[in-house]
Length: 347
Image 1 (cartoon, helix red, strand yellow):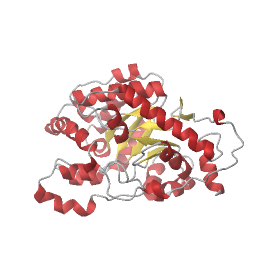
Image 2 (cartoon, one colour):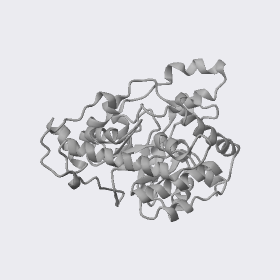
Image 3 (cartoon, one colour):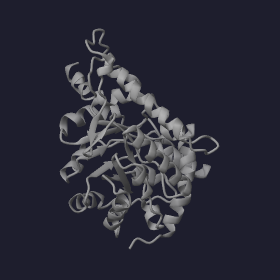
Image 4 (spheres, helix red, strand yellow):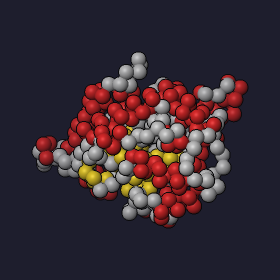
């Protein structure tokens, strides 16, 4: 049985602070956005009808209207749960995948999120627990509970050593995480998706994951929300200086994707880390990911400064991303999203 600990109670209180900070400019990486260095090849003679552009794809045995996933952000508090309900409903309307934030707190505190599946019956829903939590006592029990609560299509295991080392309540013992992931792959009833949270998954780490049976990886590179900066903001000024050199630490997605796609051809790669629009999504597909992911951009669309939830704003943001992807496909002479990676191989 999963019972709440003091850390679980602290985690619940911390989540709303994380939401506020992730919406702030203080959470942004202070680097040149890597996707600004990528230019898609313009095709002045596309020889196709714009109306024939097909953005649909398959992910976790379900069809998406375009290759995109709302990646895990929050949950476990009244505010976080309210946001997740809205994310799930709009994701279902738009036909895209949806991942929740860490479920440890909600499960330990018996706060079910079953309503999410009722609001989103058609789309892939991805559960979420931490790699450290998986490696601890009752880790597989926690993982199984996370899957059952959501009727999840997959379970994300998040890797966040940088965030944990800066977080005041963070955990630093990462021994046994890979072995626990292997056990999860072998014993749990759905696919395991391993993700970083903003510092990236390198090819050597991806190979280790693939060797233990992981076939879904969210590289989650530097460029979007910096959880190092978020945790540093929670520290007293006297402690921040220690972590200052590490606030922009992480792999760039432009360095990771092409080689990973070429080397691990059986792995479904989710590309995330600062996606701002549909052109960025097209660039991620061009570089080698199968679907793109985003979080903070959509959080800002959904929740106003007055903490009102505006589902129509989120719907419009996702509609715009899809339309911008369609334009990108047309202007490169690509009938469908998969054509972009083929285009990159030819260039």
